[in-house]
Amino acid sequence: MYLQVTDLLNQIESELKAAELWAFVAPDAQAMQSTAPFFCDTMPLENWLQFVFLPRMRALVEGRLPLPQQIAVCPMAEEAFKHLDNRTLLLINRIADLDELLSGKREQSSARA
Image (cartoon, rainbow, N blue to C red; front, side, top):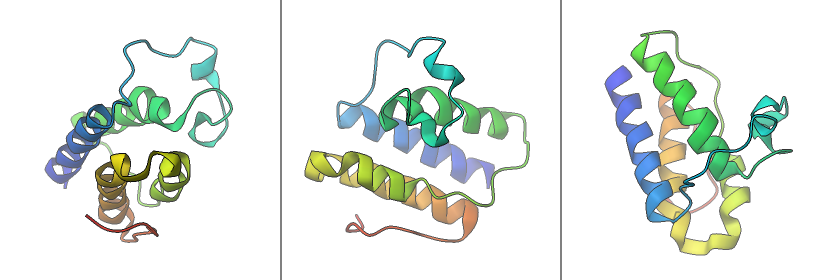
């Protein structure tokens, strides 16, 4: 399971970069203190994925700690990236793959790729 999660996390990172959503500057410390879901009050979703989600998930994998069993990032990704059209289709699909792997559910309304 940890290997599958690592592979999907790496694919999500690659797709963020391919869609030109990878940031070279981290959000400031105040933005990282958000308590809102997906830190939606302090940063765009692509920053949350890069600076919060990916590092936290990788820490769980590296520590062989319990992984989340209820996860649904895909609906938020579909909403956040809908203005980017096909540029984020593969990214959304990899996020949906991770949701499905961890929670057993796939909540995706966009086309699967």
